[in-house]
Amino acid sequence: MTKGTVPHMMALRNSFEQLPSIAQDPNALDVLLSAKDYREYLIQAIREAQSRIYLVALYLEDDDAGRQILTELYQAKQKNPSLDIAVCVDWHRAQRGLIGADKSDGNAVMYREFRQQHEHGVPVYGIPVRGREVFGVLHLKGFIIDDKVIYSGASLNNIYLNYNDRYRFDRYHALKNLELANSMAQFVADKLIANPAVNDLSLPKKPTTKDIKVEIRQLRGSLSQARYQFHSQPSDDSQVSVTPIVGIGKRRNKLNQTINQLLASAKDEIFICTPYFNFPKSVAKEIKRALRRGVKVKIVVGDKTANDFYIPPEEKFKTIGGLPYLYEMNLRRFAKANEAHIASRNLCIRLWKHDDNSFHLKGIWVDKRYMLITGNNLNPRAWSLDLENAILIQDHYSHLVNKFEAEVENILEHTQLICTYKQLEKVETYPEPVQRLLKKITRVQADRVLKQLL
Image (cartoon, rainbow, N blue to C red; front, side, top):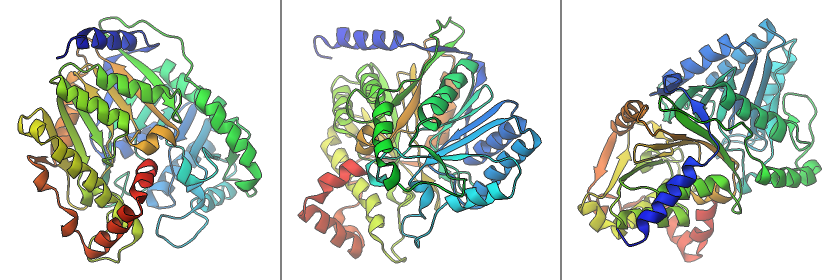
C-alpha cells in the first residue's frame, strides 16, 4: 500500500459516513433469491396495498407477466378507488416493439386497452429522458408500495419474472422503511409525473416526441439537479444506514461519484456484478488501483450466451447479436491485462451461465460494510446517458452480512472460474457473421462510439 493511501481511504470512508442517511431496521430488509420469489412477493404486496403503489421500470411488457401485473393493479384500483397508483416507464421503449421485431405501437396499446375496460384507470406515465432512446432512457428502479421499497434491476415481463420456463436473473431486495418510501415516492411524483414533458400513455390522445422536444430538454435539465429529499437520521448500533441516490449525465453526477468513492475506499475486498462487461474509464481505473494496493477483487459477469442479446449460431444472425461478443472481447482484454492478478488470486472473474437463462445482475459490496443495490450497469451508457439510481447501505455492525453472503452464494451457484484469459474465446473462433461485423466495426473505429452507447 503506497504512502498516503491510508489517509486518503479514511477520508473517503468519512465522506460516506457524513452522507445524509435514513436509519433502517436490518430485520426489515429482505433479500430475495429468485425471479419467481420476486414475482410472488410483488403480487402479494400489490394485493395488500392500502395507500399507494408506485411502480417505476424501464418497461411493462405486453405479455403474460406484464398483463398479470397490470391486472393486479387494476383489480386493486377497482376494489379501492382511493388507492394512489401510478406506473412510470420509458416513453420511447413503451411505444415500440422489441429490438429486431416487426414495427408496432408497442406496449402502450395494452395500457389503453386496460384503461378503456375499467371504471377506475391506472395511469402509465411515459418518461422521456431524451428526445431519442439511444441517447438516454428511464433506468430508475424501485417499486414503492405503502411503506415498502421493493428494489430490483428487473423490468416487468415474462423472462424477468420467470413467468414460464426461462428467467433473467437479477438481484431483489425489499426494505420496509416509511421515510425511504416517502422520499422515493416524492421524487417520482414531483420530479417525474408532475413534469410537463411526462404524459399518460393509457389515454387515447398523446403528443408526439417532436411536440414536446422543448419540454424533454427542460426535464433532463431539471433531473440533473434533482435529489432525493429526506430528513437525515442517525442510526444506532442495532441499525444500518440507507441513502437513496440519483444521477444523470456526466457532470455533477452524485451516483457516479459515489460509486468511484466506494471502490476507492476499499481496504480488503470488492465484489462486483455487471451484466455487460464495459466499465467506464473511472471505474476501470479504481479497480486497477484497488488491485495495486492489494484489495481482492471479485467480478461476476454473464457468459456471452447468458446475455439477453445473444443469438445462437443456428438461428438467423442480426446485428444486435454482435453485442455479447463485443462484451466478451472487452472481458478477454481485461483478463489478459490482469493475468498476473488472476494468477495471484487477487482478481477473481466468474462467468455465470445456467441453461438458456440470462444474467442481469448489478451491484457492489465493499469490505462487507458498504452495499450498493442498483440498476446501474456500470457501463459508459449508465455513466452519461440514462437516469439511474441506487440505495447505498452502510452496515458498520455486520447486521446484514449473513443475508448478503447467502445472496452471493446463490449468485455464484451457476458460475465458472476464469483461471486465465485463454479460457475466453478469440474473435477467430466466433461465427462468421459475428467476425465480419466485428472486423467492420473495428475497421471504421466505430467500437469507440459503441462503447459509449452500450
